[in-house]
Amino acid sequence: MESKERIMEEFRRKGFRATPQRIVIAQIVLKSKDHPTAEQIYQAVKKKYPTLSPATVYQTLHLLTEIGLLQELGFSDRVSRYDPNASPHINIICRNCGKIQDYQAESIKGLWSQIIMELGFKPIGQRLDIYRHCDQCQANMHNNQVL
Amino acid sequence: MESKERIMEEFRRKGFRATPQRIVIAQIVLKSKDHPTAEQIYQAVKKKYPTLSPATVYQTLHLLTEIGLLQELGFSDRVSRYDPNASPHINIICRNCGKIQDYQAESIKGLWSQIIMELGFKPIGQRLDIYRHCDQCQANMHNNQVL
DNA sequence: TTTCTTGCAAACACTTTGCATGCGG
DNA sequence: CCGCATGCAAAGTGTTTGCAAGAAA
Image 1 (tube, each protein chain N blue to C red):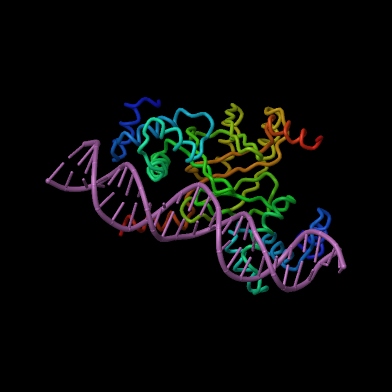
Image 2: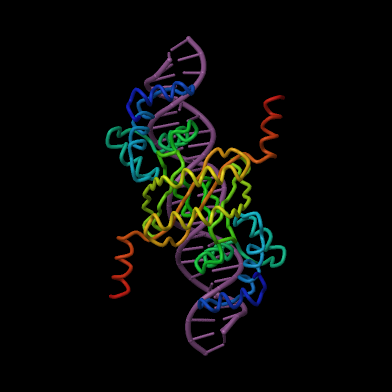
């Protein structure tokens, strides 16, 4: 799914050039499991491609979103995170540290198709977030109260 | 629900002062049905309270979010919208114009609680977005293609 | 009176844009 | 070779912050 060849073809098929910068960025973000921010992606890509600029990262992430390989998740802190899973699933998000974990439940498919029937139109996308405090943050908060 | 007295009590109960600025902002946003942006709220409030500053709007919106009267919805364009409905519901969002419409289906409650049972923890919040192109934007896009 | 809040302006941080250079197809 | 893509730096934009003055309790 995230092979170089596959990515190159995907770019070209939609009429965009398959540049090395785009390929490296796409590989990094498509294989990531933790919904990285643009900054995190930039830092990771810079190791393999030191001359690469932040502008190219942003442009490429928008491009990948446009051609449907990514979903951009905006948050109220104005930092977007990028989700390589564009199919219906739940993002379990820690309100404290921002960490995101995907949750793919069978029941979601049912929920999803039932809602679509009720709505009477075909959506072009969706976003399902559940907010919590992750185990680690919950432990930290407890410690701070005790101290 | 959005009476002046009710709002004043809500502020005080949580240990914050019930200033006229806060009350006007709360009234505007709590009775709104269209998930306004901070800027839209600022413009609306300025009519009744011309000396009010944007900073106060932002501070108050954060405060209302903190005390649970609002939900802040961040988007990838970095503009937040504020939703006076903090209970589980679906936001139907136009990807073109950003307009948001609430959808409160009975089926959501049941299927939602089922998912929560599967998760094994109690969430502190949720966000359910469905993206589409609203009727108006769809019509416009069609016209542009034809022209 | 005392502490919290406001309003203004300046600062912020992430992101976008303009433009000359470079490279993919 | 032609035209889109990159890299740099500068500009943009919604939001946050510092601080003096003002108002709630």
